Length: 93
Image 1 (cartoon, one colour):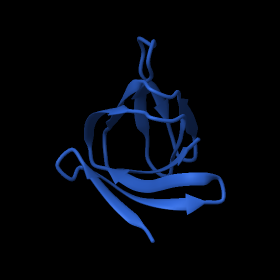
Image 2 (cartoon, rainbow, N blue to C red):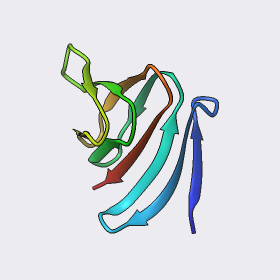
Image 3 (tube, one colour):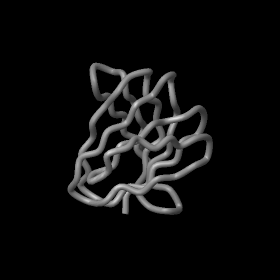
Image 4 (cartoon, rainbow, N blue to C red):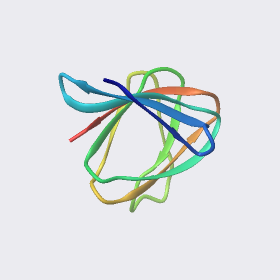
């Protein structure tokens, strides 16, 4: 069965599933800036639009567009910034 998640007063929503690649979520981030923490390695793919990402140890934001994936290590915090609503797919390793 699917599990739904809401974060940041409902501005980030996702549905958890078991994909062929493992545990995953598919969701949407509303326009805004958010900081997340990780418990596992995460591979996040932007489905549409663009997402600016500030990974741990980096000083510059990097923009990821449609179908681009970035990796976030386990037990860290990272920031994302969306100029518009952005759908994503995230696999947890």
